[in-house]
Length: 223
Image 1 (spheres, one colour):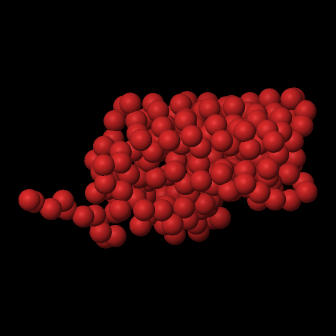
Image 2: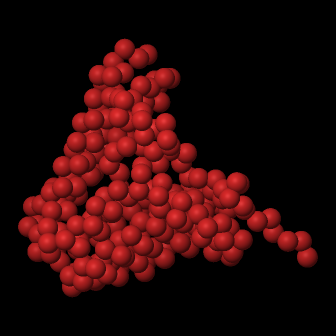
Image 3: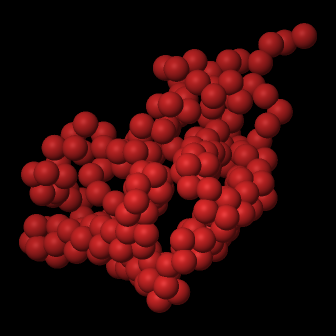
């Protein structure tokens, strides 16, 4: 019987070459697991479905009953598995349109319904929950339909010195969904846990302004 070719560390294919700091950290931590899963019958879609149908509902229940230490851990488990499925798909050559849609659906539910349960559990005013979810959605719309298309048209995009420093080291400096899960998990362990619904929208807003500044001012003369 012919043995399956094993993926070694040098052959590992990362989902994205440049990642935000916490995502890059989780990728490195998950790398041995992903390599093992390549030669297993487990598929990326199985991981996504497990995250959406098992981990996410448990997060909602734990959030509602305010078991904060467990909730902080579960949110990081969700974030880790969210990274596993995408990187597994590339290393297992199992990328598909269905997988992409499942991943989007899972994340949409997690960052809306999941965080709504977190807020309700902490008895956060519904207005702050709406703002929290709304800021993320607005950020996503502007990034997807305005920032990214223009970035692709700039051949030599110039970053600010701060961002370039991290970019040269393969790290994108700024706010993203995985970073939000880290901030959430940390704040859940502190008395100021309700600050999740204030701090995260502020950071999303700052990051959006920073990205627009780079695009419209730093690269204003780019063709």
